[in-house]
Image (cartoon, rainbow, N blue to C red; front, side, top):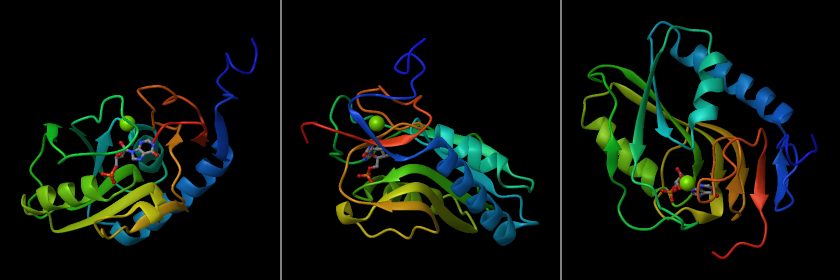
Length: 184
Ligand code: IMP
Ligand code: MG
């Protein structure tokens, strides 16, 4: 089995954060969330599919009682950049009234998705909503959104791996990398 077959190296992907670096950073984030929300049994709401790895690891790194919920936004299809108004495709399964929510995202780009989700979750009566994202594409922000827990701030690059895709590829890479030579 060669490196490509084991998904350790993809020629078009420049590694930004290794699996080891991600594990260490996510552990820190989980402990920080546990310190802030201990005793409140927060609901971790993950944005599928991009946040799946991050949410799973973050939840295991957060040593307090919590609920795991998931929602899906309309996909941008084959395109590599966001467009249009986000749309909820599948919803969480529990009421949020009075609950503390940790919204888990893989990457925040324009801010449109998180802004839409904050409005949506607030309208359900959540007590407090924190946003946790592995990556924050700072220079791409169009709508300011409060981000409470950020793994890393990055530049204007298309990132894949650790749940993040380009046309559904690369989600299972154990690291995060920048996709080279893409049409934006
Ligand atoms: P926003 O609504 O523009 O902030 O975009 C957020 C969503 O777009 C994320 O949940 C991802 O699904 C997708 N996205 C934005 N930038 C990237 C990227 O660099 N790689 C992979 N997906 C991205
Ligand atoms: Mg995507």
